[in-house]
Length: 428
Image (cartoon, rainbow, N blue to C red; front, side, top):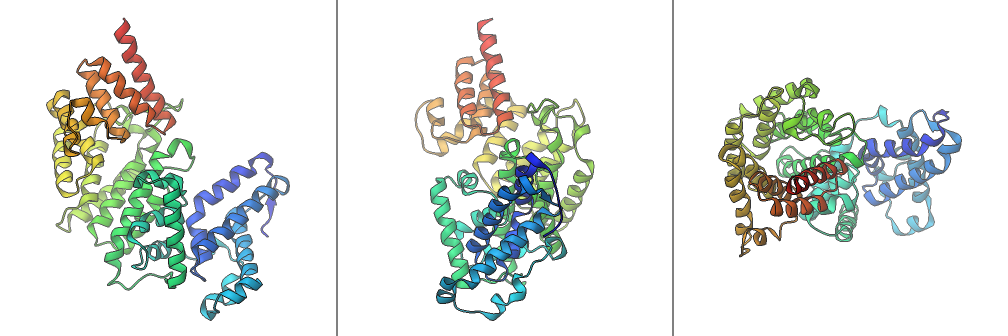
């Protein structure tokens, strides 16, 4: 085992950090030999459980990830030797060779997350499970964290993931880069997973101390190196970089949420913004426009403003119009409504937002059309627009709904504070 140094009460945090920051890499290394994702995750889980038992008294290892990998590999080796496995699992020499189960330092071998990601996008895997499988297996999110993004209960998502892992094992899906001819078809699923990670990481930022974004950013840049001529790969890398650049300004020194329009550009990461612009220039040079390029261009406009000045709302309106034509989505429509409110006034923005209810075929008045929507940003934008129009009662109701739908503690506190200001103005 690597050497240890006592840390006392920090052991639990160290174990959580080691799992969070290297989960996908460790699972990929553990599963590379057998292709059994469930066994790899179980072995890593056992290693984490042992870490929580032993690190508080024995100290945190100098290399926590290496310690976890060592223990997990021994767990897998013991399982391979068990009577049950010997009876039920056929021997595949290239998979079960002892060398594949030797202790290794995870920092001394290549990063296998991309191979694992592409394995999850294999045609043998159910298409509806591919992106969730990547998010949980490669990026370490839980089924409960991923399920809301796909509008299914956590139990349903867990069942899908279990079936998908079993399918990878039973079909013998290889953990390797596919032939270049197969890469484009799988790349679409991979991009969706990286984008999903970017969304989930932002949504769980205040409950999770990992830097924003983390694995999404790393994988986006790895993909850009792998496929530098793919304009959407470049666009996604730019999008994640531009969002990452603003992470430090998202909250103030007291941990309070700071809206994008109020953030201090001096706190943004200029190096990340420059890298993002390089990706965007490379994408535009390909002569084709796609969803991720447009989303990155929107973020680039926001990052171009100076302190105390508004962004170029007219440019944002054009970009959002184009994005809704190329890749219409609920989130994009809500963002466009917020921009329309800036270019044409809050009444026009509210009309655009209410049109979402019309698209759902929901009859009735403005509030009734909005009832089916459980999308938190829609209610937050609606509350702001109603308040700007002086419709205090409707705005208060919308703020209540937005607060109830908000998981981010800092954002929830921000919306509750705006609701309180509105209430105070009504009684003064």
